[in-house]
Amino acid sequence: MLTYDFRLPPGPRTAEYARLAEDLGFRAVWCPEIPAFGHDIWVTLARIAEKTNRIKFGPAVLIPSYRHPMAQASAIATLEQISPGRLIVGFGTGFTGRAGMGKKALSLASMRTHIMQVKALLRGDVAEIDGGLAQILASDRWLPDRPINVPIYVAGQGPKARALAKEITDGLISLGGPAEGFETCLVSTNGTVLDDGEDVTSPRAATALKPIIALAYHHRYTTDPESVKTLPNGEAWLASVECVGENVRQTETASFVDVSNAKQMSFTGTREELRERLTQLEVRGATGIIFGTSGYDVERELRAYAEVAGLR
Image (cartoon, rainbow, N blue to C red; front, side, top):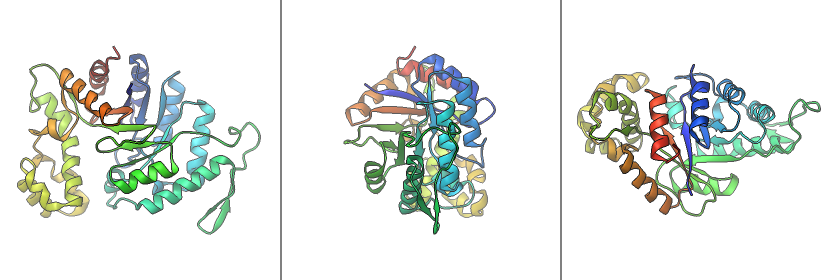
């Protein structure tokens, strides 16, 4: 049976939304690490930990280049002490978060090194980091006893990322379709729930979808620029990209985004349509779903996706 989680934007109302997610019956809430666009990830998660009682929570995903492995391990240990057994952690190479700072995604090799160092520190081992030795040395009762066993996942789409997830972590956060052979395969989605008779181009839906579809355009551009032309209004979008500098592309090209294909490009549809898609994802190997939105009317989307999942 699928588990159902929700991804929340880290901001002023995140803890409030997490309480609602808990009340609605979601298993967990996740927050992306995107410093350029929202609140600090660990401050946000600490607020969630203190404002909720049952629901699991975690970062999806941490970007290794933002933080030294010791600082990362300390943050994980601190949250585990505040709310034992509720923290879950995802790591990724940072396509979205690093793009917001004009950087390319990290290599899988560098992410592997970082994760292995963090895991060693959480076990209580001495880890070699940047030519030096590091170990958690907190006094008794300041942090949980080592080893600290927090579930760790890798987010990825390609075969190499999935192989890494299977090799060194507890499961996969799938950024594309499901993958078979994982005890835990959480499919990460983005979209909006349409009301019966509502079109993707309605003012509400279009507002919710534009940032999501824009990200899909940018992702396609980074991997195969010419393929953007096959997307709705893709040629105009591509021309606009080439006319502006890299540092402003995320914002200056938004007006060219066409949401007419949102059902095919995102997890968008009516409640019945999305329930059918959930069934198909489970058949293909998904063990859980992380519902996500753009951050527009989060409360409405929480309630709507809870209905899709049959939580209420």
